[in-house]
Image 1 (tube, rainbow, N blue to C red):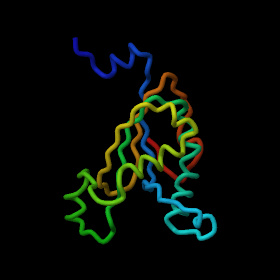
Image 2 (image 1 turned 90 degrees about the vertical axis):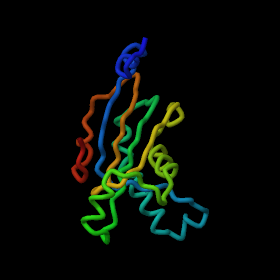
Image 3 (image 1 turned 120 degrees about the horizontal axis):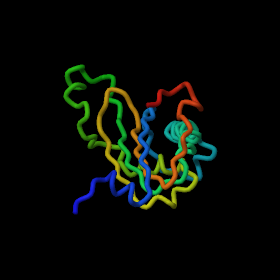
Length: 153
């Protein structure tokens, strides 16, 4: 007997939550000891991204699985025609998807509990991160309670 994802989640006691964070995704850079005193732009951007996401990710609570979609903003130098052609298409250039995943999961306090991850990166007109989570218990706090700088769905 074939079961839908929703039926399996109900039987196993899981709840699914879907959130979209409207912030440009930042890949985790390779950091060295020198980054403590020689502050490179990529490291400073990553720390700012991490600090912005921390209060939002704490709301999610304990996770067991996470499905991610990183929407990478297109370069401003691209023509409108090229942007429309690439909207929603796979992003097959650097940075690598594993660095985006590491950058997001490092924000979580208890990422050791996550036992499955699904992710993709696509081109988009505006950068955002779509997060679908599976919990055994879902917190009900609203994402926009912490910040008005970003838009949340």
